[in-house]
Length: 255
Image 1: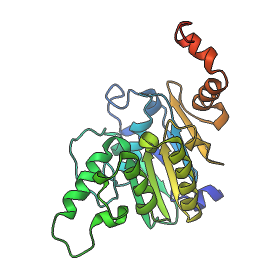
Image 2: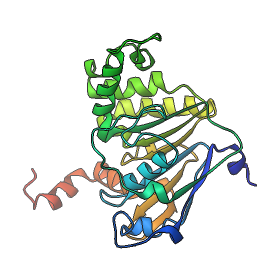
Image 3: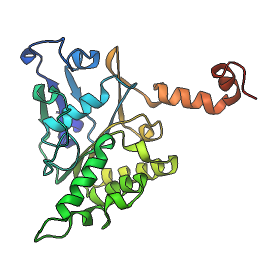
Image 4: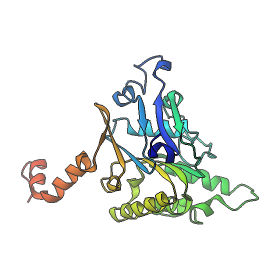
């Protein structure tokens, strides 16, 4: 057993291909899902990247739900749902866990974060013997903060260390400066024995050192280095050749 497997809360997931009745049904017709097979995770940080529609969010959601998280986000204790829109992929994924169990866990999903914040407010309005749930998110309703502030409140206050954190596009409401701050927060939590699996478009986030990056697309799933990602290449080309690229994009109308 490698050091990666010994220290990871989640070693890998395996697709139970023999149980799939039809490869033409959603989401099994997605090429990345067809080729999923077995996906191993770094004990610290693993990124899933790819174009919109590549299947990265579908796979991220499937992993989270297979582990017992609510499809719309939150901890394993959250059970609300506003719409049954998640795929059946989770039924065909077998998580292979490490010898240690996480003390904390959270599925952060930018797409349905509003629904999560609403559910927290609703539960806080109900009679309870314990402190308001919002205390775990900075002591203020997430709806009373800007979108970016509420995202960062969850990262800063709710994520407690020694946890397994699955995140789908956490950069959606964060400025570049906040994304850099998030890198620092991820590192703090990694130092507290946490493991992250993150689907992202952000070249800033995926620059985290020593992380594994899986590129998902029509080719299936493959490991790549940060400098090989389209996100890094396109961003670097634009920043270094802004005028030339704008001329090409705008048909020479840029002045």
